[in-house]
Length: 377
Image (cartoon, rainbow, N blue to C red; front, side, top):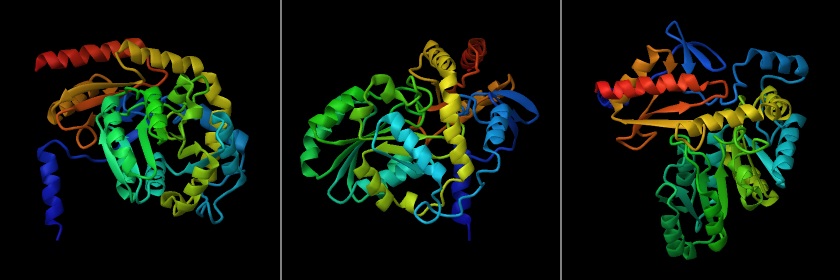
């Protein structure tokens, strides 16, 4: 009965594409415990070490008491909206100086729900080719047309806009700010120029930048001073904030439309109230205290030739990438092989994610090991 699936799984194993769930023994800020070893965790999105931090967890729980439950037991449009949800949404609206904000259960829920709701029949999306799978899935679920331009290629984007924009009603340009697999940054000011010229709605996914970039941690748009020129900004809480969920902030019209039409919002049980409260508490009380650590982390990324805190080490072949991860494991580093379809074929890599307690000497040793491994081949 399951022969087809078994065949596909066997093919994945032959091509070193097979994935499985690993049995981790625990995590503690920048470390992970696996197969009896304490390893420097370089595959985490816990950029500011707020997750897995026992002191922070205790401090929050002591302040929260028994005010918040561990389940909402309802969608937001039924009985799933308690005061803390509105408080977090209003706080984010005030920080971004936007009219309204909406919480989603995850970045995936947000991106799938936004594109599929807003882009209707007769509309079009122009999307960076390296945008996250959730953005691609949202476009495919929409009733509109979409075009994917080569990564950060503004000349190609303008060529597409010039040729296609006039054929559609509403048009959207969607990009990540910090790209999750390459660590580079989109040319957002140029995209704003094009969105104005061709009358488009601009959506930025700041998933890997929220909490890290900007004086207030609002993302690359804050760093560049362009927040008021972006129509919708998406951010997540499950990375730098160390919590769960996501948000989109923008005009009241667009947010109200999403409340009424975004299926991933409408038909999902709301995030547990305690997670919403923890997110709000972290943004209010802890995020302002780590500005120096954030800057140090970004500076460290630049020293290793990245525009951000994400450093790609492109190996190429799948098995060679898996082998390199094994070498690093035996030397105290936890990394994971990133392979197609997450990245294009032939560009399998190790994605080094910095967290704010990682030191330069630890990366220098890692670099030596990677170089030695390449020489051995």
